[in-house]
Length: 211
Length: 381
Image (cartoon, rainbow over all chains, first blue to last red; front, side):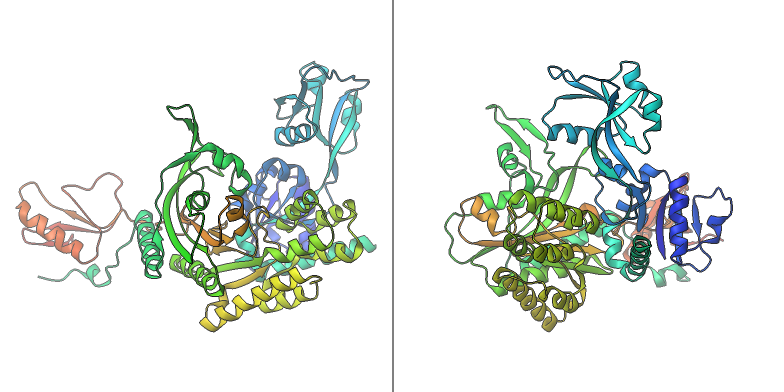
């Protein structure tokens, strides 16, 4: 049986639809259920619904064989897992955004508010820019407005939130999308179950690209 | 006197720690029986050793302290570096050593330093095919000693490195592509190859490395179609030679070929391998040929070795028993304590874990509760 970790919420629903279309359906998932472990009657797969930022942790420790997680979470966590597929949805960008018309003072450390301190640190270290990180857990856009930070590093989907808060993207760090990840030992011991899933997903993607 | 039913099937339920000690004992006997001598060392080295070889280490956090001379020292995070550093400069023949040491590393889960038991084997000097085979077999036997299903992934660094060399890539580009291949990240590898402007002939081949793994003969056949240089051919020949030898020995079933498994090129060349056992989510054994490390330290000869990460085996060796003891042996204050004691030892001699007490400790879980009747322990009616 394959253990699949899905992020709770919108992305998880979308991923489940994709897996279902590959033959990994689970009737319990389709009911409005509050359970966090959902097993299909035929015993082929078991879905675990976890916090998006925890998916990679479940997979790294082998509690789940595979999982779906945003590239942002993966980069921030630095988890020791295989990244097997870009599923091509949940597409957004990791960006630096600043108040419209912001002028950077290069003589002082840049104050960066972010949910992703690891990504921000690495990005600015690559540019040899000294920064001061302000780790926040939500409403990052507020930080420059209140003068808490100069810029923010965050994921941007449409840019609407930024616009409403008079911020604009100044640099794009990298593109983000949902990735299929797998546990390293599962790739050895569960290969017979994992390989068909991987192939089905690959075939779906190839079909999708042609369409 | 009626014999007690449980004694018939009395198998000792062992604690995790006891299983670990037993495993380490078996491995030590195995390594010594093949002429590997124990290499013991100090707990610490100068920090500079690790600073200069940061990318050789599994994690780059090192526990440091200052010694009375003001020198920065480190509790050793790795054993191989010390073995190579202290090895003789000129070498005749072959040196075979094993070690059982504590290393100090940042725990992957908690941001805290932990002490980890590590065992390993190194062969240094004039390595021939036999010496390499012996170390590979020891790696397999070590995995087998853990019990349960196991897999040894094998690769030869010369294959990927030869391909990148032929494609004329600089070392920074190589590093970037190696990182993605290691993650089996085929989609980003495609993008990176395009960005690095690799010629199509090579690009198509490099892109396949991330997924080039599986059963040995099939994967080897697939790899043969990709070989474009002498170095790559040699890598495949060496892989095939060792596979054939291990097949003849009857140990090849656990082997898998994985061309995406790449170690750091600054240290490793030639064969590299990693072991997995069922029940452990991460690599439990890692090793390879590290002639480049020997050169870095100005030593003659080649080297191959592996380390077994005993901390990764904790879950595999875990005590799944639901009992605190097999038998709870209850006596009373007025009993003849010498007789009680003899009876307890008699039960224990049958391979049972016996906990003797005058009352059941709170929450204590025993498979069976026996009471002393003045002569021996009997089932409580």
